Length: 320
Image (cartoon, rainbow, N blue to C red; front, side):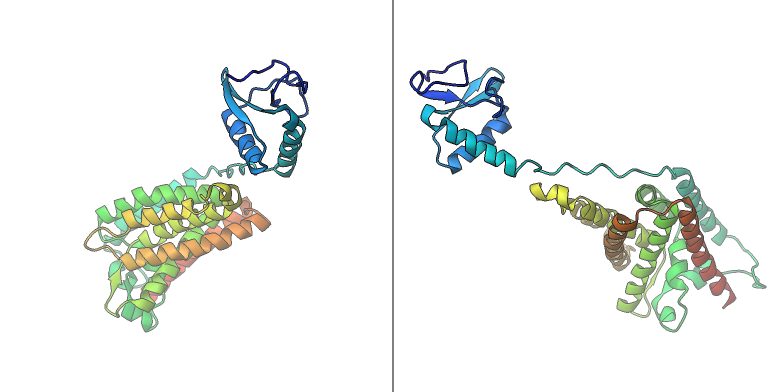
């Protein structure tokens, strides 16, 4: 049994062991430590080869050292606290989300309405009937001979209603999150850019007869962007626990779960869209750190650029 004293300021010849105060600068403030504090202090004392005893005291813990070691133990613990005063760093505040869910929902509805439009017999620019899928789908051979608009228009086409609903339901979650983080204008423009980049890579690597349609290339771009942006934003705060790669690892897991199934799944489009999103996400987060998010006017301008890009591609496709 260890002989303890209720007074943390022990006399050399009254006890063999002296409990260290929980607040080193306040010897009369008590000597009950939390479990984590007791563990850390024990590691510091052990590293400095200072003998100590750790015992349970009430709902906490108490560390005692031989009386002749008290001054040295207190000194070493103060030095440790001084060196680690601001460590670990405080976690970053969560990103303030922009409430633009209504505008994002309107765009998703517009995509669904456009799918229904492509099923109708419509006369445009003097054409008796526009074969939307035929002139807009991604067909590698035709893109290679100059029909560049297909890398854009293919993102707005879907094979059938089930394909459309799958993209709207799964993609809607990631797209909504991306737009709330970045702003609707910047979010949709970068989403479009990741889809175009993914399709361009698919054109460069697939056979000339390869054909694909769908927004999933851009959707996996959104997954890649969200993962990369989170990794960059929280890399310092998470380094202590070796978790700074978790956001990107989670995004890769989603790609593996959602992007490789189905007989007609275009794995190349999903993969390249995802990788394009990762690259865009890295660059975007660094720019946001330097300049901040665009304001309402900037987001409106970026949204117009995205709409004009898609509209211009379709006008070129119909007119050609």
